Length: 99
Picture 1 (cartoon, rainbow, N blue to C red):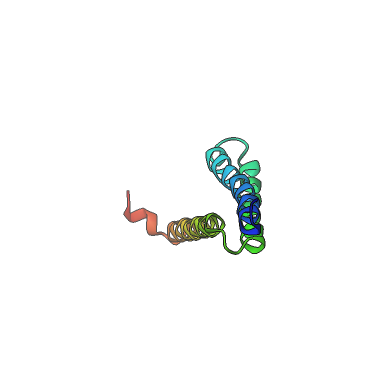
Picture 2 (cartoon, rainbow, N blue to C red):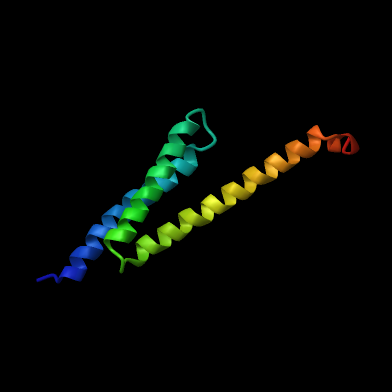
């Protein structure tokens, strides 16, 4: 007879697999014509991972996925800031030195 922790891990495992599927499909679709769908999939995967971590606090899979999503969010923010900085320096005449 399975104990309650095994049932909790199975429920958390299902949610984490759904979040991981959203993450993988979202990243594969990110640079296609349907990038907006990819963004929604990535957001949905992050929300599912947060729900799994909240509902099953002992799940290492949920914690790992949440950390993965947070790292990706940090990398995206750094990339956006880099692009903004590069565009601003070009607008301020910084690109004339490059050519």
